[in-house]
Image 1 (cartoon, helix red, strand yellow):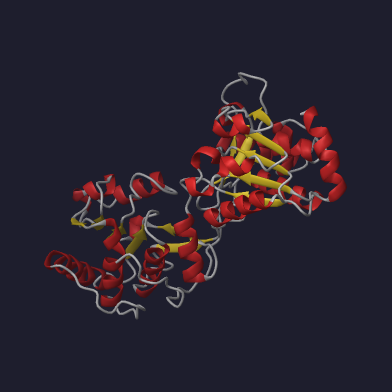
Image 2 (cartoon, helix red, strand yellow):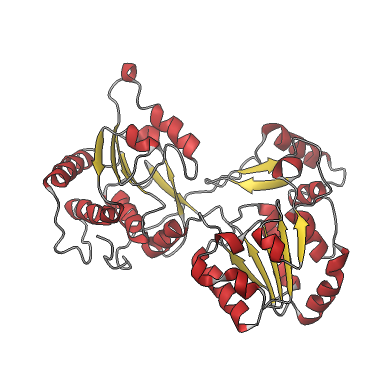
Length: 396
């Protein structure tokens, strides 16, 4: 860490001019607090986010539908009909374990009528194997199917003229629409992350049209800190690197030299940056090109916190003693802020002032025992879906 002192002296002198930070998507409240402090200490710092399997399609779909990056929370126990548009919700995605358990609770024959699952997908998934009605199509054709369903449900979908369905697709859509309309307020429409933003916009609009909001579907603010279009964020960084305006680049947990799209030539443009600092579990492709590689502590051997898809915060507690003399991102940021401390103290201080206060001590012990911070779930957000910003029909 002492090698960073000359860099910090320069950054403190110019307000972080030329200082860029690249991280993956993060939902840690402690991280959020430290980022805010960094932006105050270095007002010229630019923060970028990128991960190769990010949720930019869902993000852009929510922004285009609602004007803000809200996320849906589903109540499968109240859903009679579920439509998956290429969403493997029983095996992946935010809250998939809770979703799978809730969905399975409605598949018990001895408890009465089962729910019905309709799946449109282009490749085999766990969710597809559970479908009562299954439609195989090319992945690029799913948007057209979604537009056709939305039209049949009474939505005015721009640029949907000329859509044609095969006989098999027509039969599937007809049966589905009849089932959805017979169960208003008791259905769920989901869109998969691999589908373009247009499919997400249509799914949001269909849920509203079917009366699902407030019953089977609620929306909450994103658990991510400053959610953004990650590909656009990465392009902004590479453009700045190419222009020579990045003097110090700090990368935490990311390996963009390997994971960034090849046309961005991230590794080549990295040569334009004077100070490249990489913190990661491995001295990977990015670490090998960095000026300094800082070994990152594994999350199982250090302290942190994390926010779940519905807002509930959990405290990450170490399960093993540290194997190596590594640090985590909270400790690195503390050094940048001139307040070096242990990860335990940083996380604990985030949730209160542990000055021997008995009330805080009881809260902290209960939190560590329960595994979650009480009363941190997000409240529902009132939203109204719009198709005005529905992207052009480019993949039907």
